[in-house]
Image (cartoon, rainbow, N blue to C red; front, top):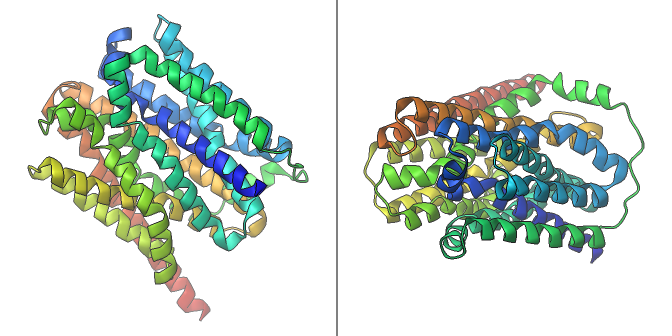
Length: 398
């Protein structure tokens, strides 16, 4: 019973960090007006989250081993609350940038805490399945970051929503510290040698890079630019435009367990990832080249969201390329590399949009979003090459 309670509180933490991750998508114009910034600077604000998120993966992973998830996860939630305060009290733009970085740092403990708790509490064969269920719970936070947050912002005001986020985080931090028990740290090992072993494995690195190229639909579109694109390019009203990107997170709720099931039935995780990537590519090409109704866009985004769950499979595949003793470290490093591409997409897309015409220009938004399918098809091609390599290796062994 305690094991399941720990798993649930870790999954709720994952949901909370998702709410804060997608927050700029809804509050884009509020933040830009409050601090008098352009779209390029806003892209930096959105993207710096992923810098903090990615850079702290390894240190937080080590601290989770040394001190246990109770203290580290609770402390990281408090760090995220601290990251919200500049949006409420600061007048200079540098402080929200620092705050967004701190939110990214704290958020990294959510997924790493899940990795650690699942590996400690469940059998290795159930890792992908339990992680997919956690992601399903966590993505409720991303869904909540769409239309409901937009409604709260319209009715209560921008600052009231931020205060509610901070209060929720404080309750979550206290619950985490109370529910998660002290766990004896693992025996100390040579961290540098383990990191070197994982990073020197070319299959792990290539798998992570190809997976990173395919995160654009979720981290580039749904997290930030989806609402503006749908409003200014597709002509949808603000409420509908704010809600539709959340369909991707609804799709991913189903996709997390569904893709794991398909991969197990097919017997090949790489093939499942390739299929998911091709569907995402074709879905964005359809949206960018054809006029679509709101109903069709909703179905399209749900399908894309289902396929976005490929990230879970990619992280698991990367861990199978190394020995069991460093599998946990490989999952942390894999997620770190993949999530770094969030900053790449935000920076590249915002730079293109700002250079072409700004966040209210339909042509500029169209140009910026084209980055997503181009990167996606390159990632798919890489996974096809990795699959072919694995098949040749198996034939030689046979």
